[in-house]
Length: 280
Image 1 (cartoon, rainbow, N blue to C red):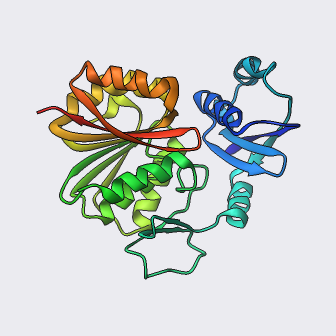
Image 2 (cartoon, rainbow, N blue to C red):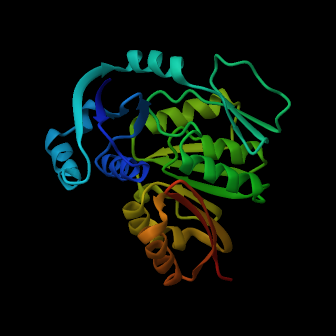
């Protein structure tokens, strides 16, 4: 499979502006982002790339900041070599250690996750993934049935499985992410994760104790009614992939209409993760 790498450079840009641009790129299919000395690179599989969509997404930023970008075709094996050079182990709350296959194990941590991300999103380094992992670490997931939407590498499902979750369904609409989640579950010797390729249409018609959804605001708003239909009364749902304003209020309102109540939220930079509970 071939990928497209779009490398952005900026004269000056605020962190929130960078996050907004990344969010827009994610909306049109870019699923991996890597910082560079002068900006960042965004990656998308060749079949999903559209120069028209990219140009359209960038129009709104023309008066916000100066930027330049280059578009390069990149083979999957070259991407793997690149992330291996830059992937650093990650420690979440001194309890979870995330590493690649070529890093040494660190058995002093309660949970160790081995991730081979390839082109999939979710190594724990992004703020949204970090906050979702923090929520999982503090949650009671033992013996629970969990739905992980926008699973990416499967890192959230893997953590929950290591913490004793009974069964996990990990869904992503990107084939690379779907395959990555399957591979990473096997890499961590997890047999309780079932990976599915698709969107809300492949969510099984059954009840879940917990739902994890790290996607983006528009997709969340579209899928919340489906989540509400499969979440048990008293069940918990954790969202991330959006901003505090206006996104959190919009998501809270959508949940409230379905008897799903806001509990609390976390914030790192401009990104937010939030905890909700379905009323009995």
